[in-house]
Length: 289
Image (cartoon, rainbow, N blue to C red; front, side):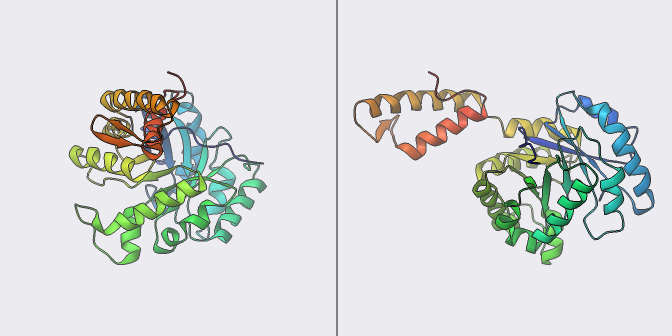
């Protein structure tokens, strides 16, 4: 069974599976995606309780504007099998699998999903180790994988590096994951901002991630959702300029000119394609005048 492609995911909000009081409130978050997290946000002693919440509460937040996912524990951990067998709901938009490092691990996930009658669920692969990032292109080619996210904190811990404010230590990794997603034609979502009170950093990183080619941003607090959505939504000024550019470019093409002078800049097909992508991201069909 071929999994369905992912919808728009400008913002992907994580919530601890153990927070049964919090999960139903996520219908008000405005996030494109919501992840019920049975992994990092669920303590070892509460894995069974988190799993039960995940399967029972997922339906309460479906149908309110967010695509709902569950993040399971990685293959090879003591909780993976039960997460797949007892922690998933058939109506999920997919299953998030962290710490993905090999095609064999993805095959194991796909087989476990099929055996539990969840073969229709696509995998969102967590690329958050040195090996996962290095092999991102290969991992994203797996048939069950429909998207991925880059986890900077785990990546730097695995690498033995140090996180900095300017993100220079993860620029290569972020770029590599974004490029792999583009080659595979599958959306990838950018790292968290751990300080959820730092709105300036969240806004800056969202714009930066969009520029790098990411589809959206991981969020760990509801207050980050609006910032991510704004960062991945073209501004009115961008849309207006893209429309003017394409109108001028179409006139040039019709007259036999492949590169035009547009408001002081040279515009040819690559820049026209960027303008089309801006309109598409804004929900505007670039083929319609």
